[in-house]
Image 1 (cartoon, rainbow, N blue to C red):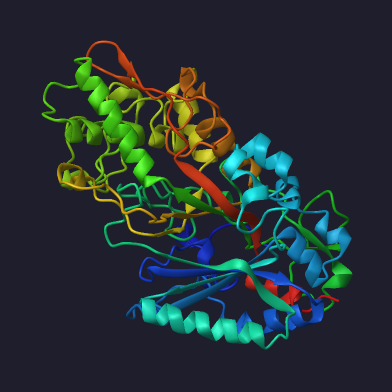
Image 2: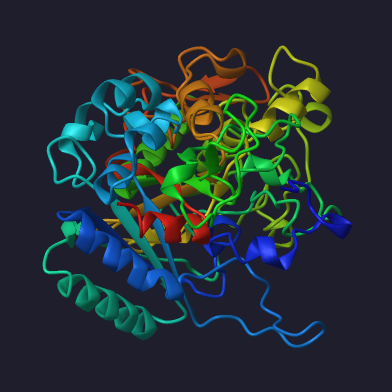
Length: 506
């Protein structure tokens, strides 16, 4: 089986037709989303349900049905992902289940892994999650639906809830298993910052010429990754695919002709429901700003405490609320730079004077500066560990301009946060490495006692943010836990042919 991309670096349409569309697109024209987390109680009924939704699955095929013709964007999208335990409940054999990687087999909600790798302890521990933890009904499936309008999403959700009811309980929503999200035109997340700017493009989808495009195999199984290697994907004994719908495995460690490639054109999906303490975030920054003013610290050009609090918030994030990166605009927000992502750190800000080493964007994507490595080595490592984020928010984003007005900042009882969704070909090397070694690491890039101020797991202990000043640096008081993990799981996003096989296993 040819595992290369086609002419001009693009995957052929026949390959895109096998890939679920959510693996390659965040459906930007469909800003309303719902995630239905499901449990299985009856393998045959679950396989019938899966077989029934197969014709509705959205693929990654181009939206121009005729070459050179107009785009016909779908008005809705449907995709399905499956946990390791869900694959077992569908009837996948132990021989096949054992070929999946360890992180996926153990799962995000395994308490020891959650604490050790992800920092999910205390209020964020799996035992306290709304779903996906050891104290809740098992999550076996996730149905991801997207629509252009709230009304369209309501209709799509109602359709699939009715279809679930028809299974007679073989497939059902877990408690709190219907989660809704949306994306705003300005891209704001609940703390009030433009988000989703640094999204890597994928070779094969955007083509070789796309700026910063990363290899197909970083995100889609069956293709070479950043290191030129094909990540080992899950396999299926050939006898369990009697009709030969999956390609033969090219893995040299499996006897030729004895195994089918279950992973090809699939991906791994990470879902985390993160509640954000918006009140706590801005109250902490206002208090720190007042403390700085009392100490005579901070830029003299900032006239009052609210302005200084916004400046501090930008230092925490690495971008201004409007999106402009501090590396390119260190002194003020600049609407003209709102979506700029074509910058590096080593030459422009090697000492972290503009964008602190502890800032969120320097951890999520360190680019060309991971000390003590050289810029080329740093860039190589950063690109190897990138993920694609394709989630949404819930609740209402805060407007930082409100700091200048009277009254309370955020209405009491307002719950907001992020449906964090990441796509990657290797959970351990990509998502977990970023979370464990870059976000949660208090010594990242030579820091001391400073985990990511807005995205670190709650088990990192006392963490302070260090903000460089014209002279010296300002070290904040301990940053409170601002994000609480409330539910999630690791999923396999199978190719459409693989989903067809899973719907017929016995």
